[in-house]
Amino acid sequence: MPKKYYRIVSRADSVRRARIIAGLTSAECADLVGISRPMLSSIENGAGTTVKTAHRIATALKKPFEDLFDVIDAR
Image (cartoon, rainbow, N blue to C red):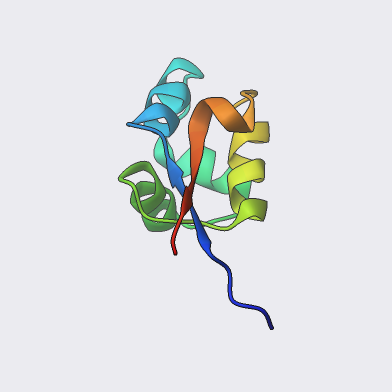
């Protein structure tokens, strides 16, 4: 499997803000996305995630991927 040279991280608290504006608790949002609440909290706090999970979060929050996440070159 090729090594990936990028990280996908939440843009400056954008996921948490979008979730709150959408009126969702972290548990509700995590259930919609199909991840655990602690995993969602980690992502909201800047931990990296997969493209698939980032897109599922953006879809659940009805926001464009680019508004919520940054793709950072990890080389």
